[in-house]
Image (cartoon, rainbow, N blue to C red; front, top):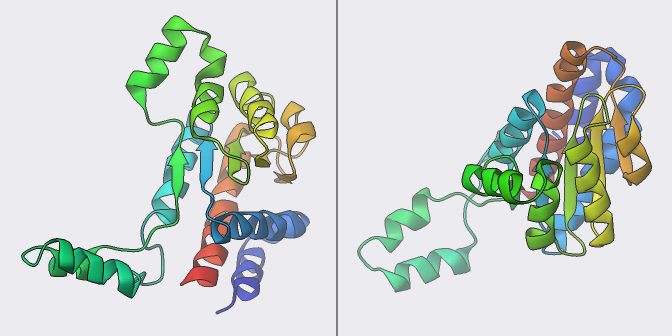
Length: 211
């Protein structure tokens, strides 16, 4: 199944997301281009959106629906490095698409919140991890979460592409997004219900492209 077919399947199951089809396609292409050029994706959000960021990393950093064998050169390097364990690692390790959740480093998050400004918990990590050509995937149901908006500002200043996943009005973050996926809902619970099929569709499209 092609990426276009996977997107069409998502729209068939969630017809209201037809309004987001163009933006889902653009977001997927942005991330594919990033990976093809050796970049990585950074993700952030609060609460349920934090969980979604972690969830999406899980779909990118290991197999989602397809097998992801390692490149032959890497497998050979593992076997050369350790004749004892290299073969096993080579056959069981999976190829990964580089993605980092900025929500998951608790010691760092607490240090930034205590020593600096809690609104800068994601921006500080982007200052360290972010490179021109990378992508920030920013999830906020309101579009107005200060720490996520600040992350988008910081990412743009770093020369990164910004993809926003938010609710129907887009909020403040929209002005800093290269692509804003604004799902057709206004309550937090309904927005989050649409967010999952959106980022699953993106992950399926990306995985189909590379594997």
